[in-house]
Image (tube, rainbow, N blue to C red; front, side, top):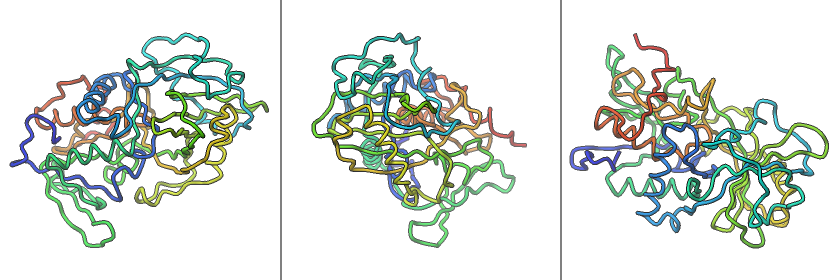
Amino acid sequence: MTHHPNYNRASHSVSVLEASRIGGGASGKAGGVIATWADPLCIAPLSYRLHCELSENHDGAHNWGFRNVYCADMDAMGEAVGHATTEEARSHFHSHAVSPPSNKGHPPQLDWITSEMITSYTELGCPTNTAQVHPYLFTSKVASLAEEKGARFILGSASSINFTQDGRRAESVTYQLKGGSKEIELNASEVIIAAGPWTTKLLPNAPIIESRNHSIVVRPQKPVSAYVLFPELIPKIPQKRIPPEIYSRPDGTIYSCGPSDRDVPLPETTDLVEFDPNICDRIYSDVSSVSKAIREGEVITRQACYRPYIVGRARDIGPLVGPTGIESLWLASGHDSWGISNGPGTGKVISEMIFEGRASSADVSSLDPRLMLPKIT
C-alpha cells in the first residue's frame, strides 16, 4: 500500500494489526522458495519479478538472504520408516513446473546428498526462474520499509470487524493491545484481512482452514551448495513415502520441514504455537538418512507453524485476493505453501484494486473471493 504511486503519506494512513510479532508465524518459519512457476500462475511471475526488484533496490542478498537457486524433485532411498498421514503425504510440487520436467542425473554440485541414495532427479526450477529468501529476515525488512513510508504497526489482536447498520460496508476494527484487555476501535475506510490461518476468526464464512507444519534448522560442519529439494524418501521398510522439503541457505544452514498435520487446534496467536519434539526428531531422522552433511550437523532450531489453505483447493484456486462482496472489506489470504513467494504480488494487486479500482499488473480474476464466499444479500 505504501509503495503505490497514489499513496500520499500526508493524506493516507496505513495501520497494520499484528497479534504477537512480525514474522512470528509461517511468514517467519517457512522455507522461503520463490518461483515464476509457483501456484497460482496468474500471480507467481509478477511476484517473482517484484522479489527480484526488492532485492536489487534494498540489497536483499545481504539483508534477507536472497539468492537464485536450482530446485528439484527427487526420489531417494532412505533409512526412515514411513509415518506421513495419507492426506498429507502427497507432494505439493510434482506438477508445479511450467513445462513437463524430464528425468536426468543429479548434478555433481549436489554433493551433500548421498548419491547412491538418489533414484531419480527432476529439475523443477533453475536460477533464471527460482530463488530463495530467509522468510523471517524478508518479512521483517519489508515491514521496516513500510514503516519508513508511514505505515504504523500495532501489536494487538483484532477481535471483530464492525459494519454499518445495514451490514453492507466495513467501517472499523475492534482490537486489544498485546497484553491488554481494553477494547479499542480503529476506524478505517478500507479493511484488508490478511490473517492467514486465522482468517475465519474475522470472516467465519471464508473457506480457509489451517494445517500445522514442523521444521528444523541444521548447521552442517561446512556450507553446502545452493539447492532447494522436494524429495520423496522411499523407506527400506515398504510403507508410505515421506515427502520432506530441504533448503540449503546462504547463512550456511539447512532448513527442512515435514508433512502437515491437523492434530493440534489453531491457538489464538503465533506465540502460543507449540512444536512436538518427536516430530522434529523424525524430520531430522528422515533427511539425515540421505545426507551425511545433515547427519553430522547440529540441529539449532525446532519449530512449528500453521499455514492456511483453501478448502477444495485446485492449482488455480487460492489464495483469495480481492473484494469480499462487502464494501470496503478485502481479503488476501489462503496462500498455502506459497505465501512468501506470492506476498509481494498479492500486496501489489490489492493496492491497485484499492487505489485504482482494478488490478492492472496481473489478471487475478480467478482469485476473486466472491467466487467462493457466500453471496451478500
